[in-house]
Image (cartoon, rainbow over all chains, first blue to last red; front, side, top):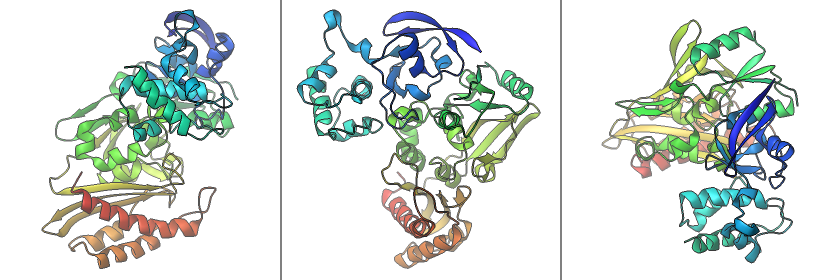
Length: 156
Length: 285
């Protein structure tokens, strides 16, 4: 079955005809061509498909697309500001070497965003817990935690 | 992946009607964090999913005397609820140890139970807290004790059309102490063994003991024999060692990708001992 769903995507109201078996990840990438959100495991384990739905980080690869009707979805593309200026969290990942191959980075940054929106002064342990659902296979997590710690400071 | 219809009723009655119409070829979906994975791997191939997300009466938490959780309460909300952390710490600890933030934002307490994994982290705390579940089908409503709910791996006492609507947890006694522990490779993994205890202790003597373990039998398991042995006794090292040995005999684990039968059996005993120690140290919180 198909249905037109309407939701807010990175601040803009959008509509699309979607098939009922599609996941949010598919709609973001294939319908709206927002390919910043990646597919890793496809089973809600690795977190590379993380986006925000009504401000909460979720795995878009197992989130039924029909469920975003009326909700607000934010992807990594939605963090970029005027004139393609990177969001402070993105900038902090660049500045602190929190990126190696980059595949986990969009999801990692969306989890960091969800954390800092709720808790602007996280401890290192709180940061590590907040990104427990985001796997990085390149760098280890030291620079990533460092980048989020410094992003928290620059956001103040 | 197999295609499926996705139906979003607003009421229980409508959900029941859709499920009856599907004649066994549809499944209810709550958060979907387990079900979608099963569909993607082909383990489950429904023609339609009936989403419970829009049904108002399944959401929300209320506490008068007992705590009542709507079955669609996301784990996230339980994790952040201060009264639950204070009064039902075993449940709060279990939810915090369950999967990842992304999963906890979507997965629901009812979904965790209805999925009926022997390893479900919410099951041992709800068993020891003696929760009662309300189940509602087209024919009416019934209440079941959580220990009668699970009938096998992936199976519950509900028929295809019934929906778990509410989880009622009795108000804890003032002298109650409780705890939850989980053994996994890392905490976000599915448990190798998990355990919860709820003890009522008066003047160093255990008046009431409720003990449960998970992932070591076809269903999450109350350890009644161990409970009886502990009740009326003073909690001592000897008693804990006896409880450990008894728990090893009471469980019935399997070998799978996460662990061996042998390791699970031994760690069931160890976790039983440790979870009681944790509860005794924790003074109820």
